[in-house]
Amino acid sequence: MDCRIPSSFPCANQQASSLPCDEPIENMMEGDDKPALSGYYETLQQAIEDKLESGDFQLPILPVIASKLIGKLSHGNEDLEAIATLMQGDQTLAGHVLRFANSVLFGGRLPAETLQEAIARVGFSVIGELATVLTFGNNIFRAKGLEHLMDDIQEHAVLTAFIARDLDMAKGGDGDHQFLCGLLHTVGKPILLQLITTMGVMIPMQPPYEELKGIMDRLHHQAGEKASERWNLPSSVKASCAYYLAPETSKDHFDVVQCTGLASRLALIAQAEGGVESSQLQKVLSGMEESIIETFSEKIESSIQEAEALIETMQR
Image (cartoon, rainbow, N blue to C red; front, side, top):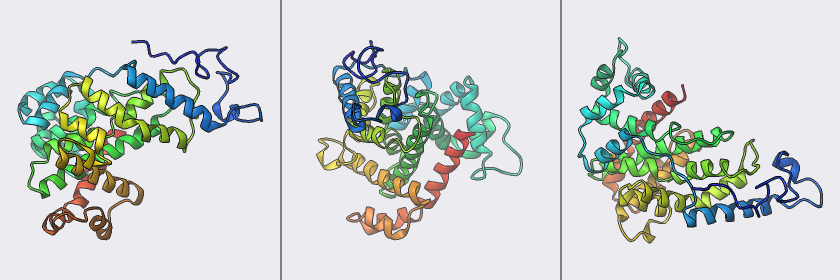
């Protein structure tokens, strides 16, 4: 598909507008004859919306192992031993698994030196979750110059996945499927960043990226829903992408979408404050059965620690 931005958009080509394409956007905004920054981003947002609506954007091709991991976490119909065999053929993935098994969270007296030893130490279930996170991480999405934003998005996704898993288990579920929904609920954001970097526009490369974040906040639901359809992800993942902020508007999978939304809110608190206080937990989960809140309150700290250990492993 043609991913070029329409010629009417600023910086689509050298002659398209008064905004010179070789000048940083921060400098473009100086002077009375330059358009306001908000106007620039409004135009960018409309161009992105048009591409999402028409389907005129490319998605990364999911590796074979990703499809198998989705099958395992969604339906339990994939053999984790077969997945481990696939992992052996991916040196980068195997290396991350080994580092995770040797982290403070799981490390023993002697380091695990083989993939088999790593699996024996942390268990097949954890290895499946780990491999899924790594598969949907930076190995798939690329947004040159915006890696810092990518890291923030990925950190939130990983935290949400582990919190969602344990919240689901506190409610009596197995946690696997909820882990997948939590991990992918904001997958639209890296898709948008990757799309923007292919559109030939000038964007600020320094934090805080507020207006760029605003575009992602408004459009990532639509992008995630479109990606879920193209990748043939479970309908509950699609619903989580589209409705996690307003689960009551979801026609199907209300419980899954609600759990994803609650986990996402708790992950935001954990990111901002380094943890979740008991009062904050009670407020976010208000209306849920006290027995569930009590069970989950005993697990959320370990959920966050496990997520942080994985994030640290990925950043090495």
